[in-house]
Length: 122
Image (tube, rainbow, N blue to C red; front, side, top):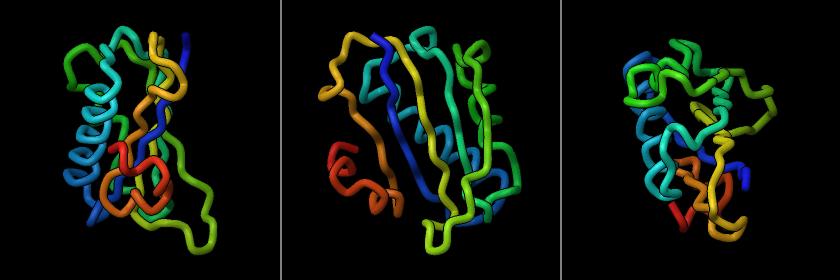
């Protein structure tokens, strides 16, 4: 089965190192909690809130073992009034035997407020 796995995390500063660290941490949690291998992943979409522009979050995955061939795309979230600031969001599309109700979505830091119903799984 092909499944979508959501994740989000917040960054304290609009700086390259923190953005890359948070992105690596987020993909690490998604991979671990869903027993994924890079070769299981079809592609990854990463978005950043408009206040994060110090780097492309996708850069964080380039140096991770096995992720050099995973297609990754970055985009900017639409600037909705009142939206969570300094937030990196991720959609991982992967092949997995897990059922829809077994997928573990990951929400870290202040991003837990985005989906409190799923944040307890993180």
